[in-house]
Image (tube, rainbow, N blue to C red):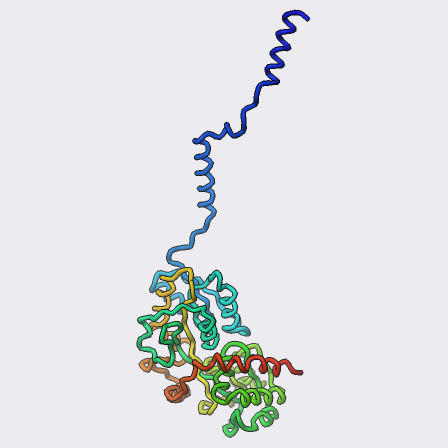
Length: 362
């Protein structure tokens, strides 16, 4: 091998044995900084920040009535109110169960319920945050919690309705057989919505045994369990049913459809008043905005708008007037209504399971 070949081979060996640079040497302090800034920028762009004026409202009030009110409140406050409504069949209970499911990581801020029982149950479970709103100072004490865990907003009555006058028949009499022969009986599912409030109130006033006995008689008489109170009112108005139990707002909503002989019995001894309720959820993600929303929801102007648009809802404040003579008569009874809502949860506990068994029987 000549000198030239030896030199060429040595160059090749040196090139092969030359140590390759470590990948870490490619990352200088300046390059690390550039990578960090790039990742932070991408993360910031992808992250959707919640607007500072956002508040999440869970609402079981019929959206046709609630939407105009909420739109007006947004104008007044500048809040972005994101609303989740409930269904007719699962009224109030559906949203209440969602609140329970989210207790470890609340997504909602305010619960505006069309009824009261589920609000009372949520409060007992420690899922509401007390807040005494200055807007609630003129709401009667019977319709708000002392610690502000809930406050009433409007009230409806649970009433008996007929497709023909049968004033002699009451819940405690043998009315079921008579009404069955006159077209049948309809109620909404008493496990949901204002139906459950009605059951709890009857449980307090009539006792567990008598309340369950009443529903057993209804079941034996072929009562129709319908999807909601509005369906009950409609079927009675159209004379597809002879008798029903519904809420005052549903009764008035169906009056225009009534062919003839559509009546409400406002003087029943079993009359139950069910207030709507407003509450802040515990650990609500937008606390300040939640309080701001509650303050405007509980203003007298808001209740007046609710009463004027959702006919059948009566005001809790005495200064707000209603035009309908039937509602005026009910409001006189409202003043003397039992202040027993604090007892509703315990009564519901006793009745809920046996009631479900009665309703499931063939």
